[in-house]
Image (cartoon, rainbow, N blue to C red; front, side, top):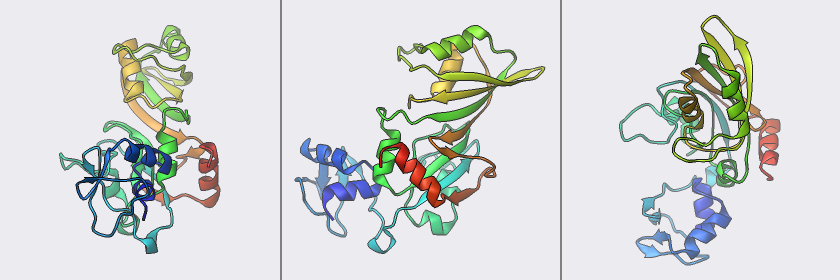
Length: 244
């Protein structure tokens, strides 16, 4: 398998991005700098920027698979965790985990909601690329009343305390109770822990944070901790949303 296809099938990046990594000398095969078009043979060790990559799915299992998972809190949204905490892969049944899928993007340890897992490297690259602006929808429960000024600042595009400029966020109040406000936030950026950092800077206390939608893909009533394979129409809509 050619090196660019190999990297794409591991879920690391697209073939185009793989070609750029190879051209920059950032890919090693068995310790030697890879060349454009070089083939990876069974048993070869491939490293990208010093990180060893797991082999992609075997040819008999090469068809792409797309899985929706409802991540609970206190679960790590990575394939492995050095602290030995439960990961999203641990929640999958063995036959799905055996397909060598990887989570697309992240959802922090104390948040719950929709996580997509797949072995489609090109889709992963496009969904996580900062230039794509695929919308993510969150339901955020805030302690007490949310001032209109805070909503206005979110909608106008904040500058975080660390200096990062954020794109405008669509912020709507869904429900107000005696002690909390439920917000619906729609983000188009992939800034790390964006909602938590926004609320921190605005003096808002988050009680719960749940992602309910990625592009056209909706969590709906999938039970917490459960996973299911996407239906064909969901896959088609998701791929169309990123130009595939």
